[in-house]
Image (cartoon, rainbow, N blue to C red; front, top):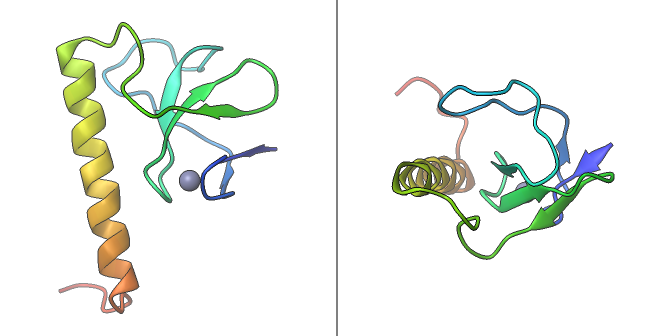
Length: 88
Ligand SMILES: [Zn+2]
C-alpha cells in the first residue's frame, strides 16, 4: 500500500495529466488529492515528498501542478470550514 508521506492518506490510484503513459513509473510525480503534497514515485514501495517543482518540468507542467494544488487546497479549506453543505 502506498501512503502519502505528508498526510499519511492511502493513495491507491492516480490520473495522468496531459496524456502520456497510463501507469506511473519511478521518477514520475503526482499530487496528493488529500493534502496537495507534491510527490514522486520512488520505484520502491511509495513516494518521496518534493519541496518544489520536479526537475526538468516544463512551463506547462509547472502550471498544471500549481493549478491542481490550488484547487485541492481550496477544496480542503472549504471542507474544513464546515463542508457537507453539498450543492451550493
Ligand atoms: Zn497527502
